[in-house]
Image (tube, rainbow, N blue to C red; front, side):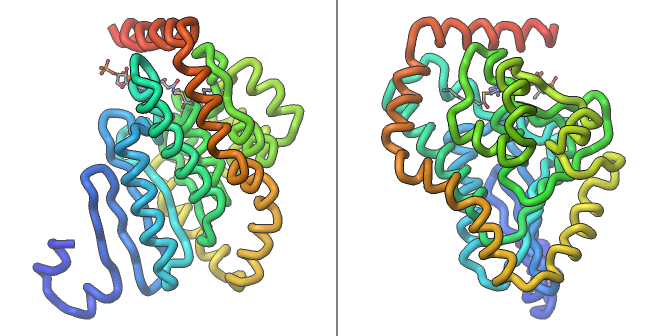
Length: 279
Ligand code: CO8
């Protein structure tokens, strides 16, 4: 980035770099091989078509850089990791727009869940729905121990249904029974509850989320990449292949579902509720 360039030394520029799209800031430390991706899409890092595209481009760049072995994903927004999919990309939009949007959601999931890098979610705020999904694609989750925050797949509360690959990701994370309850009831868990069912791996004070992620990364970096990557792929490939082989059908399903009058009405009511809650 510019600040580093102004401070000049070529050595510094070589050891670490910072690149910023408007809504994504990536700090890459060449000496450790670890990048930190800061989501900074105000107010709540909702995953819009534009933001998802930026996230995917940033991830792809890191993935192609063989010197980057680990990635920490975190939020620059206070109190929120990510509010999940941007409801405004699913409400009152054309079928064509909904299809584009859904392809971007698929792309994000495929890239993160299939990443060769060690991925750690530093969940420093609430993480509903798509935010929870994003954190579940990572290899390890550290959450801020603040009872005001919550995490979970709350889709049914909006009158919508988590797709099979959201469900699969959660089953792979917390098991079948916990997922069955979580999905039907649209449960949002407190950090303590999330830890109990294994939805997150560790709780720390809010100030410690990022430093703990870095410390944890050191432990994962000690494992030879090749063995770890093959193991990760062995665990996740069947789940990934299920969507990869059915992307178009999944897009069509989504568009057909989300453009229904009854579903649009539910989303509208939910948006109203979000606004009222504020007042
Ligand atoms: N999309 C769009 N706008 C949002 C979203 C969102 N997901 N979340 C919040 N906003 C908006 C709010 O409406 C508000 O707008 P405005 O300022 O114009 O009134 C603004 O962001 C700030 O929100 P809050 O005032 O609520 O911020 P808080 O800090 O009080 O709370 C929360 C933050 C906890 C994240 C809260 O905003 C919240 O609960 N948001 C809703 C989260 C949610 O339920 N997301 C579900 C999205 S659906 C999804 O991800 C998966 C869909 C799968 C589709 C399957 C179909 C087949």
